[in-house]
Image 1: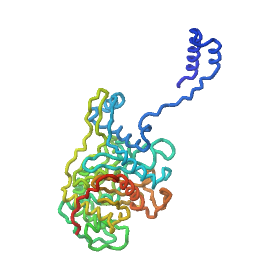
Image 2: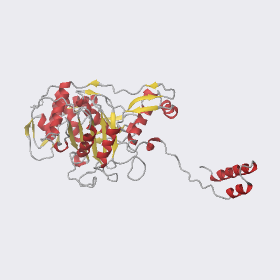
Image 3: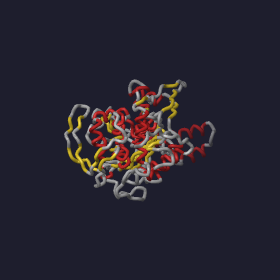
Image 4: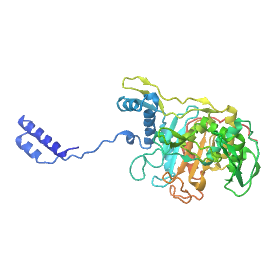
Length: 447
């Protein structure tokens, strides 16, 4: 109510008119006019804040898709008009069972009041449909709330993404395997090594420089690609990246939807491309959980990549169906290469791998990822039916270590991905897979 005095005057005028026409007596009108308005004015909530709790971030993403995608209008103004006045009926890909699984898993391991935030996206392999999107910090503007959707990039209501750590090694492996390097390929992997000289896609030569090292001071010696993935050996994957070609790894990343980081570039209308650094394979670029879940879905789908989609149908007020963005599913890896990647990533969740404690009772594969100083902790993995990526980090201070930080009433030192993000992934995937068929992933024979 913008003018209480005018409202009071209008109320009294109505009472006088009612007395004049005999609807109430003059005494009743006088008595009523002597009382205050007694109104408790509230502003109705609109927008995604009114969505089912936990689904607000996905709702916000859908809104950005509708307002940003040219399929819904040639100009921003046309898309906004359609959104505001089109009487749209929007059907989405969100699966309530999967969303509930993500929410319950997340809140079972991370509190909304924690400095660290857990973020997860779940995608359907072979279609790109976004099935779930969750955060441990609720949607809103109050304490321990946020309206930033950390699952997605800055053009879709998100942040800037997060460094992925060793989760990115799967991209390097896919590149090398596509060139014919076998799973049995051996590289001498010391505790410390130089980054070899590499040439990026712009023809820039990056000279050799020191700094490549593993978490353990013990040298591995000659090991296969399977062993290197299971133990996440940096000094194996950096020279493998150099041998496969830095630019080829960049092209593989682009084909898997990882060509851009989560941050908006200086133009304000596009995303920053990934940095073509020698440490690319170690996950130095800031990517989003939705990107990672969608890229890993291609391995589950025998090499078929589909862009993430959130809409199944949109109709206007007249009942006319409007076109919706397509996943544009297409083959980016041969099935044989995808099956070799599956073998590599299954080694991570096998008894010998860094993710052995988070394996689920289904045909699965995945990868841990932990960045420098344990600032970001990831686990990304999949079955034939579902692909999910989870990260735990402090989004307000993304360079701060998670070591010793309270996360869901516990602290970890070091805060590796298999200890923090891994249990969330495990619980969400186990619940979401309930009732789904345990279709086996395609695996290549391990050496």
